Length: 253
Length: 302
Image 1 (cartoon, rainbow over the protein chains, first blue to last red):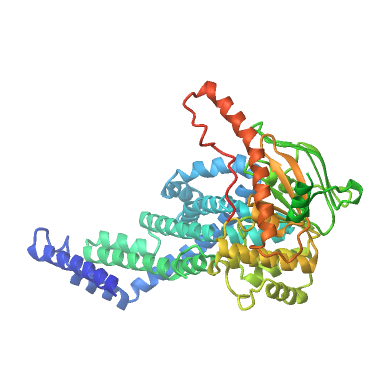
Image 2 (tube, rainbow over the protein chains, first blue to last red; image 1 turned 180 degrees about the vertical axis):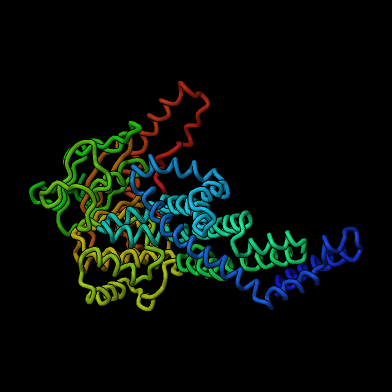
């Protein structure tokens, strides 16, 4: 209870000081609108369906790209952890590419795919697949050796060992990797959408800038924060929390 | 002379007799076993050990005497650098479920319930799906964990985890059960309970057990045979059969007399090693404290 009061207090304080700053009028209200103006703009965008359409479009793209990342990243991570060739030859390449910020893939993607959805999907996949692969590999390597020894003494071998011992033992780490991959994908998506017009949350931001509608820009920023937080909270933290409790990794029983 | 003999006859030490098992009649036969780790530490040297079927053998000794290495060689987790290990006349190769190894930690799969841990292991053994649950529940009953079938390992106490681990091991029905200080991390009370439980199960099933411990009392409480080992290099110094009736009670006077006797033997085993270690150290480090040996002290029995 106390936590919620503190949270709410901090939130109100922020809004209050924002409103105060606008009222003082240091900056022009066109460049620095108050929270009420931003809220009105947000409501207007929700009202005429622009926000919903853009959100659906962005999330649809994100969903497709993220599924592809998971489908490639998790197996790639498992291979890097289990097979010597992948560990020796593929892993350095993956770690090297990981040093490249995902948006740097955009020029290449535009040349290869043109001004299409595929270009953005490519950027998002490149932004998250490596992180997922590396996190998966880490968590497989971090499996308690005692469990591996126990499996061998119990005679658990082959697929039963891979799917019944290695995978569940690595699962909490893999889910953390998936969460990380999701936040990378989310960033890459918006960066990609901002840089070329494509109909999505990024485009709403660009349009706001072009029309000098600061309230709209801020409103879209708020919407992006809210969407990001919701997915993180609702999807990942619930799954991760459940998993960690079942695995006995948290103290709370 | 006569009095001494009479005293010896009265004392329960007459129940400790040297063991002689011929290799042909042994279930487990270890011959001239030697093992040297990559860091040149000689963990085992010329170890011979023959174990009959149905015996409960305790490998007893201070840390560094190679008792765990010997056990791991039996389990197939360690490939010894010399000598042979045979079970039923066949040289062992790698780990196998007929020689089940239990660790100091319960090592349950944390995402599976107590029953799930057992049925998963039974699945690996090839037991049909329809029989697994029933068999799991039977062994859960046997280790007195009824009511905790659907509990996850992290919700169990240390002793209960160990019992679940024991149930899993028994359900696999191995011909040889290898235990590496399985009760070492439990508190004194739980430990006694687990020893009594293990003894009653052993009496009922008659499995061949090789049990590693550094606790003299535990070894005499459980073993039909106690193999005393010494460090640097790891070797067997004495192999005694314990003719004390079962089930044994931890406070039994005869048992405690044997404990004192074996502690004495253990100390003798330790002394030369300690003296040697001290002389080795003197030229390099004159300020070495001989009163505090760095390692190899036998831990007091709980």
